[in-house]
Image 1: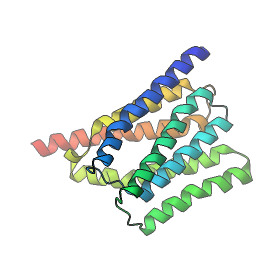
Image 2: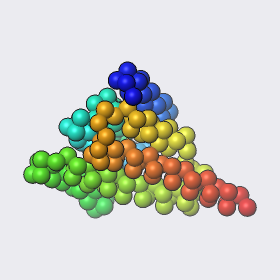
Image 3: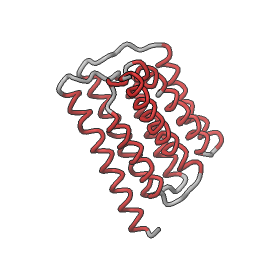
Length: 195
């Protein structure tokens, strides 16, 4: 693909990021959604460090959507804090945060951003477990459009990458797959519950 095509794909992926997040942010501002501030701080940290690792491994314009997502995720964390959303911090929350922060020393000592991306992708996917558990029992409480947009965004971001390696592809591919599996599970559960 030409550089221009990769830039267009990156812009599309960034647009999908905004399209996915705007309704969620609006819901927070209206007081309908009360996100857990600490969880969003963890996700913002994870996403932004992956963005830096992708840049370090020459991901180029394909890394931009992940960076934009990291900034928006940090904004959601700030909103959650300011709106006095759920602020109970559990031992598991601290465990995820510490695991996410260990990625930086691994990267520093190994001089290899892949280790940071592996740790951060694992933390991000483990953080998805409570959402899967909740949606399994209450599948009608989830907005599947958000997850479909994020999966699409990640797949387009992968196509926009200027350099393909495990470091640049792992995080967006794994989170896209998690979103797709989540959508399939929720749809299956909705079908079973209807019967």
